[in-house]
Length: 172
Ligand SMILES: [Zn+2]
Image 1: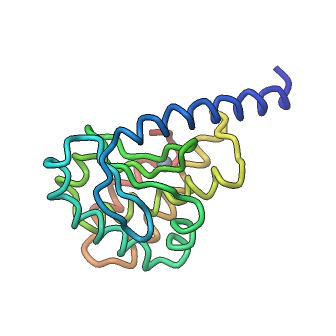
Image 2: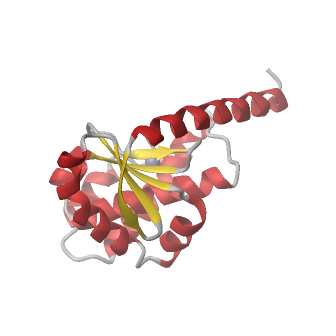
């Protein structure tokens, strides 16, 4: 497949995904606004509302990093609390996903570092860098590096940094 056709198909896929994600997001409950972003909940509200203060504190902590703050303002549209263990970034709808599990068990510093990580994805996405599988390890490593740099400024996070180090150079 030619590179151009590949890009066109990828763009089309993103548009379709964007519609699907927007439809799913509309079914989510809007809990609050954090740093100007709607915080949405996929699990029932009574499960996630008690975790809302953790989302707020983590966004505020992440936004103390100037780069992360700029990216949150410019390249992110929603924060979604989702069931399960997997956090991430939904490119088509520019949504940072925070897993229910993360919010239940991680420290504010760790949640904030995940937000920082995802803002790097948001920025890379906004600049139209295709996430071709060959580039994924490079992109993940970059996000992880910024996540670890962020944590280095916060006391008591050495164990998180150590844990993250093992993922540099791999896709997860
Ligand atoms: Zn990542």
